[in-house]
Length: 137
Image 1 (cartoon, one colour):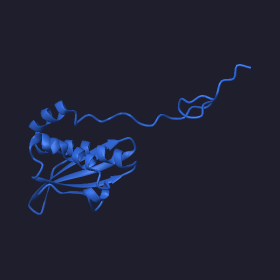
Image 2 (tube, helix red, strand yellow):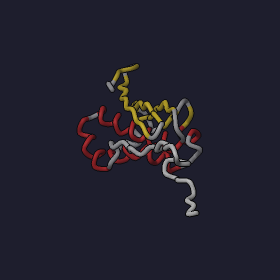
Image 3 (cartoon, rainbow, N blue to C red):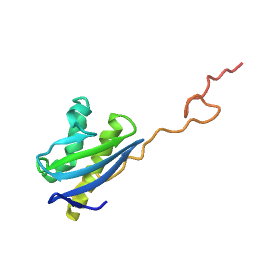
Image 4 (cartoon, helix red, strand yellow):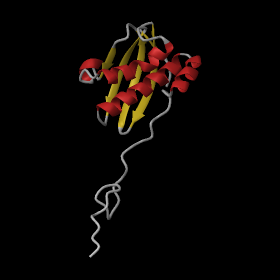
């Protein structure tokens, strides 16, 4: 996505996806606050520190953890999927910020979308792979 100027501040966009979650992330120069769907990040993610640490990890890799506010609109999936989607969105927005950020983020694995998703159920089976109990006689 494109970087845009609003109120004399640069805004950097990034979109992240994980499972069925989609997160549209904006990075705005600020103090390092995280806002998800209009709520503070720690409230939205039920004060689970691992989610917030993961979201801020790309910023910490570049040493920018207190220089940008993270504004997120997330939907779909659960908290884990949304947190990982936000992390990918933040990393992509940081690549918009400066192209030289791409290499350190890529080496840490922040720019790789996690392809794992729920496998579809197959006919003749109870779940994706769970077969009915076998009876010999």
